[in-house]
View 1 (cartoon, rainbow, N blue to C red):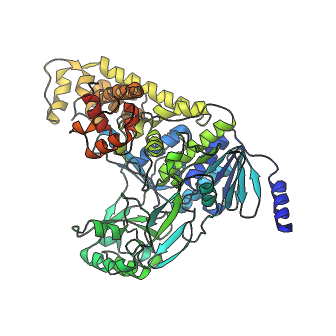
View 2 (cartoon, one colour):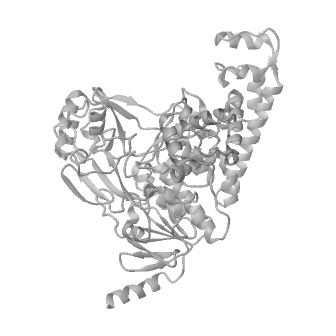
View 3 (cartoon, rainbow, N blue to C red):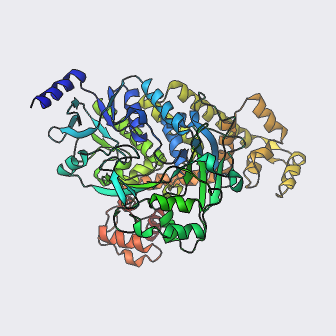
Length: 636
């Protein structure tokens, strides 16, 4: 009894004030949530089990990638920190899919793992209104279906007006390596207990998911001369739209090698001890980031798989073996990896492992990420069934924003599917749910021509400014970029070029020649004509120099000119679909007669019987193409 009283009074002594927002968990979601809430003026407390591991990169040392890079730029445009930290800790930059259209361009950085976490912590420590406390939150304080604080493992009760849970893989986390398993939320760290059981008792539905990570190895034991070098971009860009970060001047290369049939055979020797195949792991892992044993099993016809050898930082010798995620026994991992070209003498820092953890199906949330059952309680990150730093960070940002708005008694903030990839992510989770770790892809966004990485600031910075997250300096920089690009587009629309100047350029590109003066916009719009081509027109280069246009403005102008038709069409489609809430579907509609619709969509629509097209569009398994077919069939 004395112990309980002692902890009770200790809690009063240490935390006499009531916080506006308590964020539980210091990963990517928790860090963004805490920063957002504090920067919006809410008195915020970040509770995490280990302050040394804030924003730890638990898996690969990289940020961005396909669709994920767009999310990081959106976070940055709104005033979050992920883009800034990605730039300050980057060791390599690549713009992926540059050979495709701009809707597919996706920035990615290789990061210095230790510097990434350090930069995040230093940024958070410099954030006003933000306090820190190291302890495990093991329970929530609830009063009449409203959260009023948290309870820690030391028995301390901390009061607050809202709580954001960002527990990641720590909720009852169980680590598997071969036939061994032990509790843990990450290698070397204990699992978090208590919260799942309490939430289930309150009426929440929970489930289990799985993720995994590869071995970490000693780079000094590798023969990089046998691998294929993967350097960064010749002219690297950066994530943040702010000029406080600079593009890399020096970069570290990654490398690529392959598994082989010999490697596969060695891995198969341990399948009977694999927790994935012997039944010890029953939960689902990320389909698009499978373990090496899963790849061998599912793609038995493939005689090799790519492995990307990624340095963990500027100075460390630790290396991440991307593509070799595994939970096989450590001796099987070691023997197989030593048969990979360049890994013949490899030394392990630690083996790969799988981890099972609790999550809560996100259909139990509102679009604000507040739970439907408990008022003032928000979920963000892997607790919602997502995978990836970027997906987690964006949810943390949105949860932190909305928790702050709620305690300030202001209107909630949400993003629509045609406004941001973040809007697509949250809408997918809330309306469709997920039974496997959710990962963002460009294919998930029906408006990806609008949601490009280059225009995230134009789309979202005004919203971030209104929230109090994006600074006035950031807003003015965005407005200048927008205005300069608009003026440059007008220049192309209003300026003509003579045949004697245009035709040499057109001839060199194998494009049809012109017989008379024509507007530059028309010539620039041709698919095979680039900004470098039209800069050969004297008036264009003169305009760029006289107006001191930077690369962002020039790139934005090129996209607006060359893709104006696609952009206009997608905007019209977005406007039409926003009105679908009012398009009623007749009762007992016979979906079986629409043969051009996917079988899955027909079955789901027949079962659920949505009353509007908008509702139909949000059902899991019903794609944007299925909705288009439905609209055509209905005569819309």
